[in-house]
Structures are given as C-alpha cells and as structure tokens.
Image 1 (cartoon, rainbow, N blue to C red):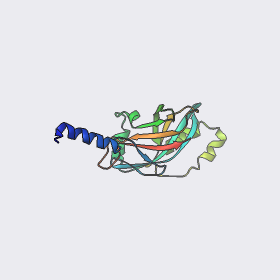
Image 2: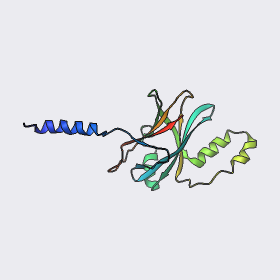
Image 3: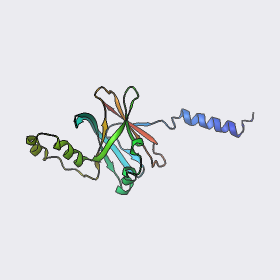
Image 4: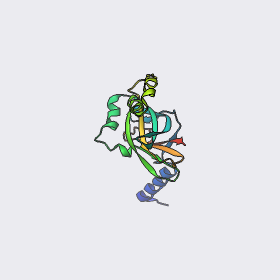
Length: 168
C-alpha cells in the first residue's frame, strides 16, 4: 500500500491535532508561564470598581529583560490579542489597561475618601519592574473567568497560548 506525500501530510496533521497542538496550555495561579525570553505568573485576580464600573484586576509578576517586555508592551502592537478574559458563556473581554502595580495602587487610592489616603500610603514595596496589573471591564454577572495569554514570541517548547482559571 502506497500512501503518497498527500497522505503523509494528512496523517501528520491528524496526529498533531489529536496531540492537542494549538490548544491552550492550562496553568495555575502562581505557576510560571514562559513568554518568549520572559516569564509571567498570575498572582491573583480581584473584582473592583473604577470610575463606577466593575473592573477585573489581574495581578501578574513578569520577570525577564525589560527590552523583551517592551516588545509586548509597545503601543504599536495590538495588545488586545495578547491578553483576554473568557467567561463561562464564551464571551471574550479585552483588556483595558496594563500598568505597573504601583500606578494601580495610586489610581485606586485617588478615588477613595481623603481619610483613607494616609492609610493607603503604607503599601508593601515590591519591585515595580516585575509587578503589573491588567485591567478588564467585566460585568458583575460574568462567572468562571479564565485569562487567556497569547505568546507572540513563543520559543521552542513554549505554548503558543496559555490559560489561567481565575474563578469567580
């Protein structure tokens, strides 16, 4: 029996499909996700309000060379395709903003009553260059949220897409 080149390609395509090629790889909160020459880990996620709207705040630790992070953070790239959140109905929410954690604390503090400001100034100091937040406008009724991360600079052995179950 002779399969031919076309048959070999079909068999290989089916094999890779069945092996899960192209499906997102699941990671847990706190687990390191390789992202090119950097590593990202989701530390926690919280539902908060900003300007009177619900916002999902995803706290991440992003380590590696700043020049590599800049490739993803650079405004010329379409960030919406790299970080999204899915709910249990399959609805996709695109990120609104990514910023360092200190900027988020400051922004959050500025919408609090003046009496609370002084208490909030005593925040835990962390390496600003590694701690970021990603903000998503998400309605209160959204449930079972999953962060989906596309890896634009995937290296050998790294997943092209990662997902982290955030819960809620």
